[in-house]
Length: 208
Length: 224
Image (tube, rainbow over all chains, first blue to last red; front, side, top):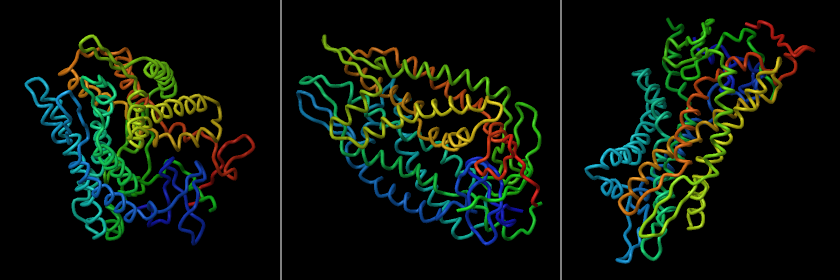
């Protein structure tokens, strides 16, 4: 039995279970004052919007350079992938893998996973609910780590300012990359994992 | 929008990941309860939560102030040297036409951690009162958001990578803030792990005054 089937709303802020006024679909939490609804408002639309924005930014984020290094010999620009390759050395390879995972694999996996969760939930899938909610939690947990590359580029550029010998400046790809991270984090926040279970809940009258 | 009617028994809850109605059992300190349907942790009863969290939060305040007032990274190359603080990194982006990314770095590495620590200090101090006032609940409602956007641990991995990159060209001088920040990462993790929000919610003064009597005690009646 779910709270929605009983006409009850649980508060995301404080966890309190409460009943809206008869006929109302929203109300305020009497304990913490949070606005309540049965499900996050317009969860599918908002999550799709953020996901689409992230997907669009994903292309320039990977194609445009994130760092430009200027030396006496000239200027050279590196994209995120080139940064991973440059970092690869007999001693630096573990860090190269960290950047590869955080900057290339996590953002792509996040976009694919969120798309999969949205499509299956909208189609009313009742299969693999446990795995899908685990996938949601994983996306929620690892998403922040994509910011690693933004910090790498920030501090590399802030420190290497040895004009005219050598200087490093942030490139135009950086803002798109940061946007991918922020938009996917907002997408995760606006997705309501209870939507994964709703079709299952409506098919079972009682949960044993 | 009007206030909802509470169900009266606060041990009756719905899982926030699958909406299954269930009753949270009484737990011994250190024990945790999980949702039988989706396995989400519903509550972990932290031992001596308020005292431990206060101690860790005070430590975090001190470390945070030190970390943001001394240099984090320096380098030296052919007789020239340079150094930067966390804020200096964000400022460099701002000055070089990357204003939005600069603000994002400032927010995730400086502002959000400050809010995370500051709100937690206020919450824990307020929660130690016999009857935690309403503002404790208001701050507690916003605290999880500051935690999501506070990314000191992510920044530290980024700094580590930057350090290795720079070491190819110059001699890197680790600043004091670098060590302080690493300690802060663990203190913040401990602060979050020792805090029991359910314990505070059970005692806080309610937003809807209809459910508080003259002494501020909750008088919610069973309605279902």
